[in-house]
Amino acid sequence: MTPCVGAGAAHAVVQTICGVRRDGVAMKQEREPEFADAFYRSRTWRRCRARYLQHVGGLCERCLQRGLTVPAEQVHHKIRLTPENLNDPSVTFNWDNLEALCMTCHQAEHKQKRWMCDANGRVVVL
Image (cartoon, rainbow, N blue to C red; front, side, top):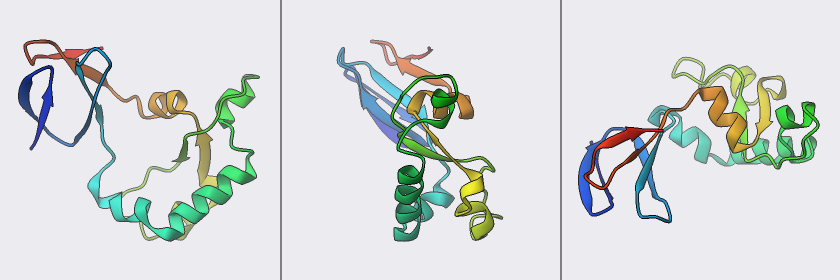
């Protein structure tokens, strides 16, 4: 459990990343599993990610299909990484398994729940 401090209230959260909005209310998002942390920090992944983004022009592939020009912020694995396939280059580094996405499309893909804490420290689903 990690302490999260927002709007003057401290509370415990599990596997989240915290940020503070301009109004001082703490916001939390689900976090990628820790088993993949070292992979995502690896030089090999960072290089693959950069080259893939360059290859697709740095734009969100899903938005581009809808005629929108939105910068990609994430490189998404179509086959989700698991402890079992993390060391399989045909899953982790195969460009056929990658997709450049903007943050909105990436969050929609993972159906991430977004919530915040109210002034009393209670979690409110957005």
